[in-house]
Image (cartoon, rainbow, N blue to C red; front, top):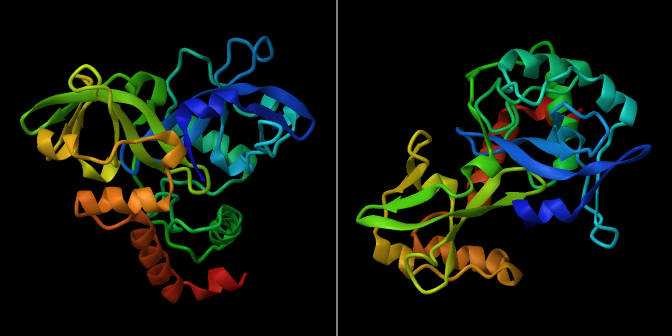
Length: 272
């Protein structure tokens, strides 16, 4: 399901043995634009710590109760490797964090979640990912060192088209199965007459984190003619129209092709 990052703030985080707070923001990497951690606001509990929850531990949201399950106990969260709120998330810390939970890492391999390409069903993805993680014969290729960015910090970054500025980042649309950031929500009200549009990270030419600016190889007119983003109308039909407007193939086709290619040569992981 696609969900705005800000919408997660309305969900209670519920561990196996009780509520632990609410979502504050997300950390994502600047290569695959995939969420690596949910940052939990735990109130007075664990104050002074940056409480990070990997998507490996996040279940499917209960819309009726406005609850996002966290498949951990409070003790597991409390005893996982510490990270002071003022410290950056280093690779050394991540290795300790993933090792503590015995989760497969995301930075070893060519895909957004390491050795396994994105899949339609997250539970099935995790099953295969853990099998691959525990398989001694798996080769870890293309290790990389991403920079983690905060959704709160990137909100407000200016969008620069080929021929001028056209808006700023207002929110992010997150796929809560693969935890990929599918779109940036761009608010154009300061430039045009009250319209929000969606831009996929794959359509970004580059980002100047120093200038807080996102550059697109698209004209202002092309973006201006983009189908308006209305949260209630975000579905596959709208996405198809959006991708056709930019003459781009849908990510759902790309990911299916990537998985089929991987599955053809990794049948032993799927059988396990």
